[in-house]
Length: 339
Ligand code: UT7
Image (cartoon, rainbow, N blue to C red; front, side, top):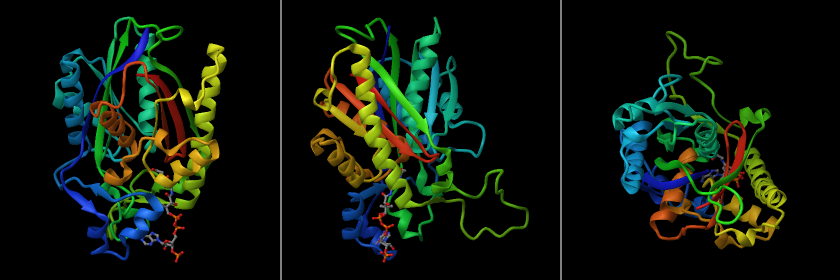
């Protein structure tokens, strides 16, 4: 039995905002944004679009690619830091209704930008322990532009909106030995001591809005960029090393970076990837980067990247790939997958 990704989809709002567009409104410039992050543009949802709307579009694409209906879904797992509603209901339930997946259980995952990595492992676990359940949609979707302070140049230039979805299926392929397929292993981790480094401070039960309070800035993300940067480089480096070491130990054959067709990192900052690559001696071309076009789409960035690789013909059956997530929590993780 293997847990395989059998289809992918993505949705990105049509409104494209370049660095120059932002520079016309706030004190920033294209040169700073590109040199510090690798970002050239981001796509921003319109007023009426919420997390579940982009998630729905990406999910429809994945179902169409696989040629299966929503009725065949057993689980919908949606990772987001910018869900439709505060607390409940989950955006996954909204998608379940809109897509007509009435046989699917549905829930959200809150693990910041690592949410998709967590979601894939959660789906694999749920499918593995069930005799009858076979198919899951794992979605990363963000309309993070609605929780950004657009007057704060230190954060607003970094993020964009989008969604990616993968269809995950329990198949008869082997998950070990010759011809093995699917999700081989996952590393998940967290360091809650870093909660203050990336957070939406207001609106939750720790610090709720109070009756009569004048709202001067809507709930918005705050980040200690330098602290998160250092955490990201360390966790990315360790996750690559540990995933390869664990795979080597379990198979008895040395698995190295050379065996990977792609490393698909969370797209937060091209410099994080470059720093980790330099430490490990990994050539830059091994990392798939589309941050220049989409900026940081949080939990959506890895599934968007997977869909672009897949539809772009850059992934082939049997390719070994490695995903890398890091973000609010702080959380980190990675999946090792045979495509
Ligand atoms: O997805 C979740 C995970 N998030 C991340 O992984 C993000 C990790 N952190 C980072 O990517 C980087 O720390 C940033 C891109 C956020 C910031 O880069 P940095 O090299 O750490 O810059 P900095 O915050 O130290 O700022 C350097 C300078 C400051 O000016 P002074 O004080 O040196 O005069 C800032 O005021 O750059 C200034 N600055 C800007 N200038 C023009 C900050 N933002 C901007 C801006 N445009 N947008």
